[in-house]
Amino acid sequence: MYRRIFLNLQRWVNFSKIRRSFNYWSGYSQWTKRIQSKYYVSPLLALSGISIKDYGLANEDIKEESEKTQENFVSEDEISGWEVLVEERDLRVYRRRLPGKRELYEYKCAGTYYDISPRNFVDAQCDVAYRREWDTNVVTLDILDSDEDTDTQVVRWVAKFPYPMYPRVYIYVRRKIVDENNGRIVVCSRALDENAYPDDGKYVRVTWYRSSMSIQAHSTFDEDGLDYVLTYYDDPQSNIPSVAYNWIVNRGGPYFLKQVHEAAKKLEQSPRSKKPDLVEVIRINMENNNATETVDNYQPA
Image (cartoon, rainbow, N blue to C red; front, side):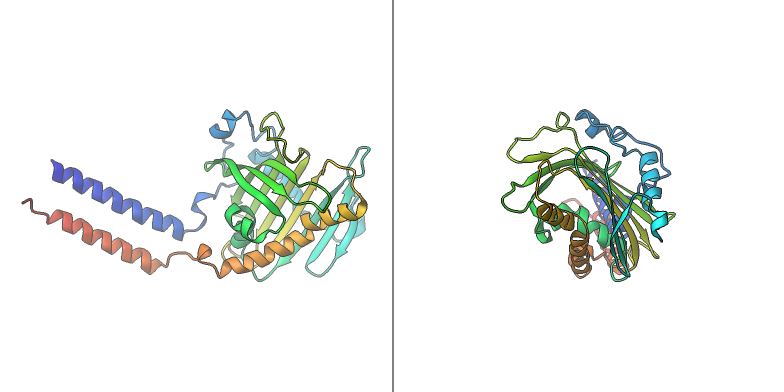
């Protein structure tokens, strides 16, 4: 009986190793949640009083957001309400004033990269451990809660602001959806209400923040070439000089994207992004088969 239990256990362990190897080799197996899939409520986030639907992160909301961000601006007649800030070959930046008394703007950056893959472009931004390494604007960056089924995280980000301003803390819910059929990845972030996720009060809390990015692959998620559209706004909770505000805008938009591009390029050469070779997966399989044969041939003393 003990021999049978040990044999079954060994086979289960071997199968788990092979399955993990194939999952890793296949790349996006853990976060390919298609836009067409059924809306799913995250139980983990629900326990925290957070509804992704309330924050505009349900599948139908993200699909609509993706369609809006994919708008191609060609002339000023087609960008009603938007002001052109930058117009280069592979980068266009716009802004429009948001309704209200304060002079706050929403920004849109649209561009193309030919030398990085969509996978590395997204991972450079969403892998918090890696982002801590390259993003000089980060004081701290942590995942407070996460749900793998919906690929949703609650993120706490303390960002540097120009002296003499104190750092700002952003606590937001972020959701990522991969549409394999159309070769598109959508990442949306929304600031959380202070009641949903209170903080220690050490830093100034930014409670009005929204970001949406849509990435379109030129071919596959692992091959170089992508188009992106990033739309974002936030309220830094301070009456700051225009010079300082422009610094913040540059950090949040074009300058940040340049940093992401450089980080994605480095990621391509990093072991983080290297996938196990199919030969290696087969080798593991063969070794596991040999281990099983050893168990089968086991003779008790």
